[in-house]
Length: 459
Figure (cartoon, rainbow, N blue to C red):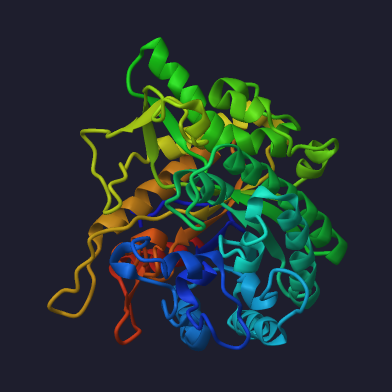
């Protein structure tokens, strides 16, 4: 069908989820508390006071969800492993029942002919480690490496693709600077230390995964296409500061072996007075990757703005003299994110132009949209806007490939409606609807469209 973009043979089509967003069973079988348990149970932190205590009950219903994946026809399923389910206190005693759950999930996937892709950290840090400083301190990176070794020893013989971190920008800046994600801190240097220690943890985890002999190792970044609100010099300078925080703080150490040249302009005394970097860290962080995971949803329009906090001592790491501006004249999703598919092409092409051969093969590890889904009189969800979003972004992805970007796979976000972090259950990204009261799963029109597209590639 002409409605479907075409991809080369061997291109991987998948779907993605994350542990705290779907598993539930928050206090079962030895799982310890995570920062998201603490955060979501703190009054006022999440919409409607929602928590991930039950979520989609995937812990008990995973065979049903794997059956949905099999019917969808995906090649791969990207899930995340809950660190506090494996090592409840963040270090020390390993919880065998937690490992057993992921054993069962992986075996169920393989029996269905689906390749597992495991993410080691999708934001559910054991609370015990946060109590000792969290990602602000280097110890957390070291404990992350120990947990990685445990997971890889049990699952590495059957899970070929591993992702160390998901969206470290969210962990560092939404978690430790903006305060909209767990642990809910608003800090300056602490957030920058968290960003660096997340990268150190990645480097240490890569070493453990290589030692375990897994086939592919990568990291997932939520890179943003930042656009100036005008042609003014001030707005263009604001874009550089936004790029530094959202993109360059990750890609420069990972792909170029250096820290961003624009970091002092972006963070001033917060970075010039840092004491968390050590000799050898860049080499550790910049070890070769088999792939780079990229999550992409929308562009950001940036305008110059004054510091949000006049007192330098009280500034957080996101007070970088820029503001996001609404992009008019385009459709916005239920997240109020603008839909501009061609910016997806631009981001990937620009990344290739910046890093050249240092850019490893790319997997799009998340892409999708939250929409105002309604159940129709026929009991179905006719989510035409999500279908259009997926079709147009896959077309934009194909254009980037035609321009020379080596993209090997695409994972739709998300298989299931789920706990959308601080937004609770109000926002639905799934191609399968979840009725949270009954846990009934209902495939949406977008599920059927994606299934047909995958089948068309093979046909």
